[in-house]
Length: 144
Image 1 (cartoon, rainbow, N blue to C red):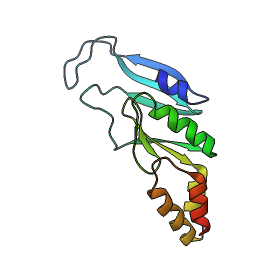
Image 2 (spheres, rainbow, N blue to C red):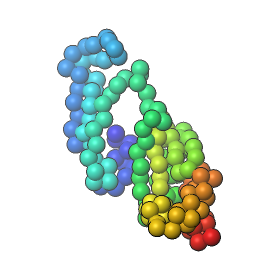
Image 3 (cartoon, helix red, strand yellow):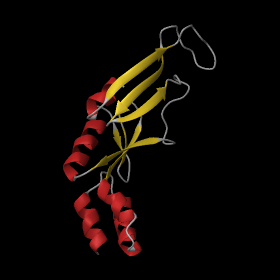
């Protein structure tokens, strides 16, 4: 969590709970190991449970960071793939810890709810061909 709160503004660790005893099943834990963390990212509260090595991060869940412009997309994308992260598709990536993120422009959400469904489809088709999102390309596609 220290890493994540260093990446995003208005972020902090709020509370940390530790295992009160040693445990062997279903996942080993020693007294004092981190059990759960309450934290804030971008002003929004989250809770994380340490499932241990038997329960790694998977693509079944991702966190979304919505950006206002290309500079923000580039900043957070580059920071999260740095030091061992992995680019995936459609604005998705895995950070160095294996957590999945979607670094998405607010514009994409606005286009997807546009009453002009052809415009939304063009924007979505353009995004589906990307790795890191390129706002200018999405805007151009949306316009036709």
